[in-house]
Length: 197
Figure 1 (tube, helix red, strand yellow):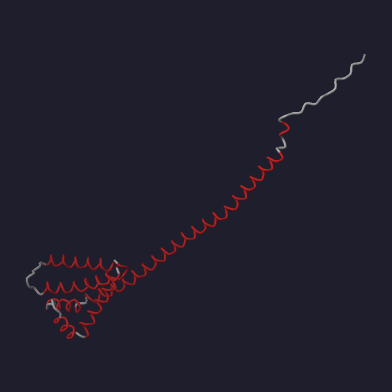
Figure 2 (tube, one colour):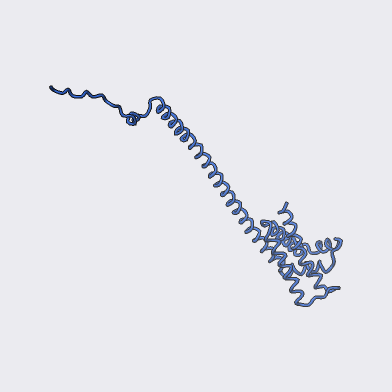
């Protein structure tokens, strides 16, 4: 869903730029100086860069398709495209002229190629990132499995040690310690030597 929204955002930004510049160039109620026009160009370029940089290439793909469609329409079917755009509600002659001028001046084709190349780069980076994350998850799973197997191996050894110590305690209780007799030395009765008369 997020990538689809990014795709639509790329299309919207790609369409808005040439149309807005056409409206500004046609005059009308809005009159901008050269500096203000440069600021508008800069803002649109920044918005386009943000749109194509996010969403793992979805925005760049939308912008590239839009620029390609604009280039094809204005070069191969200009009359049909102009008639179609004029029939759309809210589309003015200045917007159509702006799109046509941007295409014929070469701005739209160049931006289309740049966005297409950037799309492939972002997709490759996204695939590599997924592979790295997947490899980290696999390593973590292997580490957890190794710890589990190690704990399972240690449990029989601990049980064996405990059973051995219990057996030795029982033998000690049954037979006594071998050196217990040393604590109570036996007294031997010796005959006193007979005195000679």
